[in-house]
Length: 248
Image 1 (cartoon, rainbow, N blue to C red):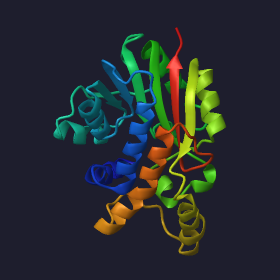
Image 2: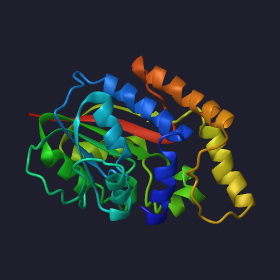
Image 3: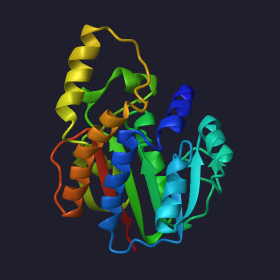
Image 4: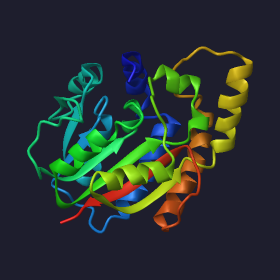
């Protein structure tokens, strides 16, 4: 992650439409779990720690947020996020079978293509038998943008490739779906047409738009969350969500 992006994320993640909408989709995913109550949950690649704090408050989970970059962790320390630790998620400093669940959101995209397996194997190691993993990654190379270059994103996934990587790490995949689908035509126009025509330099896309636009952009993601709660799956989108289990 580009260290400069943490400041932008910290100022926007409570209110910006994308963060709020994707939290709704995450809630829909958690709601599909056979049991939603966990005692100890690792967030692998927590950034500012905001999501760990939100998950702890929302579900009563005891969160253990870890991240490689102290730049992100410093915002969490400032905001009172508990139990933050600095580490590489491909070498997690916790014992085997330490956690009931692992959450990792948009982190594996920062690994070089093909090297994400080291982190997935570590997630598998620190989970208890029967423990669950909720994973989200960015989807489809055609959606690479000036923002993803700025954020130092190294790869994007297809659903088939991330599912294969999760299985290769020893997990049983319980469910998977694309997400952030309804806005994909807008994203394609912006990334593949507008940004190229205007020859824009890499830059952050993380900012809270005007209030009315911020509320409007949340509507498609709310609709998608409702669809996912019903058990439907989306065939294409800008993100992929995966639910997996460490088998006994």
